[in-house]
Length: 214
Image (cartoon, rainbow, N blue to C red; front, top):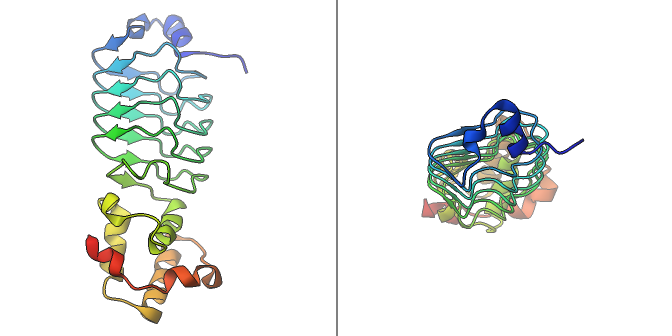
C-alpha cells in the first residue's frame, strides 16, 4: 500500500486550510484513505476527527494538543497510540480499534473521558491507567480488568468514575466467600464472557475491602 498522508489528502480534497501549525476550529479527515497523519496541525483548538480511517497505521504526526476531542475510533489498522496527542482537553476516542494491543502512547492529559471500549485485542490498561481518570472500556477488557482489580493490580481510586466499576461496586459490596464468587460468575455471564473458576480461584476468593474506597 502506498503512503497517503494527511498532507496529501488536504491537497487532493482542497482542504489546504488545515496545513498550518495552529488550526482554529475542528479538523475532519474521517472516513478517508489516509495512511499517515503527517502534515496535520500541531495544535487544533476544536476537535480532530480521523475516525474510520481503516488504512491509518500510526498516530505519528497527530496534533499534540486538542482544545476539544480527538476521535480515532474505528481505525482498525492502529496497533498503538504512540505519536498521538499529548493533551486532549475534551474526550479521547479510540474504541473499535481492533488491532490496538496496548495504551502505550496515550495522552498525558485527558480533560473528559477516555473511550477504549470494544477494542478486541486490547488486553491491558497498564500503559494508560496511571493518568487517565475517567475510562469507558466496555467489551472483552471488562473481565480482564475486573480480575486485575481483584488481584490488587490497580488502585480503584484511579478508575472509580468508570461505569463498569460503579455497577460492580453496587452488586459486590458486602459479599464475601461463596456469595462473592457466585456474583462474580453471574456478572461474567451477564457480560457474555466465560470464566474458568480454577484459573481465577485465587483472584475471586478475596474480600471486597478494595471497593470500600469508592
